[in-house]
Length: 258
Image (cartoon, rainbow, N blue to C red; front, side):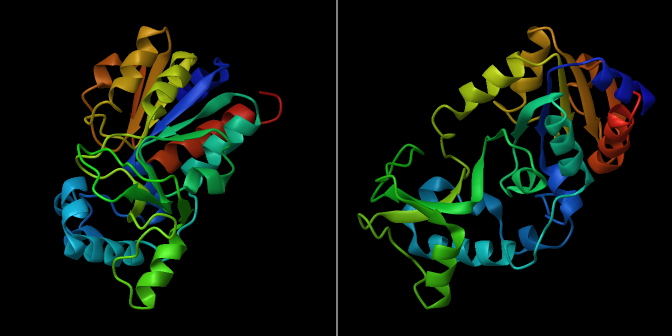
């Protein structure tokens, strides 16, 4: 922990890269969590092409989203620590694979969401193909769709053009939002320290971000409960829960007189 605090203290341009292990500490299950929502809904069945082609898949998807938002969730110690680090002028921002918006709730101002956000829905057009949404640009809070579903409309359509409406998250087979990967790579290229927290670092192109940061001269810290394929690239590896690791380290860095 002291070594992590020393690395943060010696850095001026920290960037955080966060994965599902950060969200699970707020009670949001990942694909591997026992029980919970992903034991009732197979995420591999909700591919972009299936969603476009099947009204039943869309109905099940909205049912899943309703369960996702049923229990209130709040930022945990990891979210709050990174927000404090940014507020102190030591963190340039966060790149996240998570879709829950908890970094923003914690106070982080620059957040790049690689896989979109579950807090909004958007039009994807009438018959999009190739994993690329071709909607009219309409967007709304997720509650718009869930309210429609609650009133009996299990396949709500875009009020502007009549196209299909989908959660503004990236499904399997779906192309990442235009420009988001480039923005993430630009941000990590500015870092002198990249903290990868709660990510298995196995899914590309996201897993390429720590590699890119190191290639641009940044030091890499990996904070994860289990080993990752990029541990050998890291200056420091800490096996543990993100909140339990990051919070005391940031407290030490921001303590008066440090």
